[in-house]
Image (cartoon, rainbow, N blue to C red; front, side):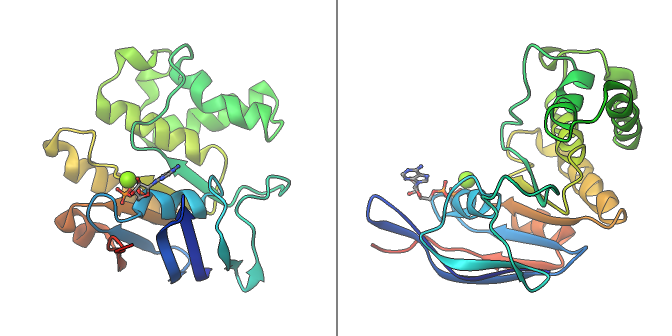
Length: 212
Ligand SMILES: Nc1ncnc2c1ncn2[C@@H]1O[C@H](COP(=O)(O)OP(=O)(O)O)[C@@H](O)[C@H]1O
Ligand SMILES: [Mg+2]
């Protein structure tokens, strides 16, 4: 279980998150909903350790946890960014295998074997030698998900996974997330789409812009 206690974050004197408390149970799906500017991405970046919080604590299974600590051996949080952030000059296989090789120090053969399994799981096998510019939005997103999963995170976060895609793909994305739940991973999904949230979420957190 991931717990956030009294998390506060401001930018330039403007408070974005004010004493936020949150519990995310293992193997559950939390949806964070709220209007643009409410601080959803900021919260996700704090959970992923990409922003440092001003105050408050994180615990993972009741032990103190610093998301920004890069010296941990195990990857706790993975992120699928809103615009996917794939490396344009690398193939699908290379995009996914890069971090396991560089960070987890997997040898090329092990990394490629793991990537091959992930590609199959996400229905991407036939695309392994393609480059990002050759892929549709939905395919790019699945590559971004595979790339995050290759680091074996305990918790996978998505920033607005439906926003960059054709609305007809919404159900497909929901199905990918629900299928991943069966593998035991915990997921945190930011969305401004209440129907999408209802479809996937075990728990909802509503964030509102603060007046300051
Ligand atoms: N790096 C930053 N520096 C200054 N202000 C920021 C930064 N990141 C976000 N903000 C501000 O924080 C507020 C919340 O932004 P954000 O977390 O992106 O909201 P949401 O994802 O809900 O739309 C906005 O007012 C935004 O301008
Ligand atoms: Mg955002």
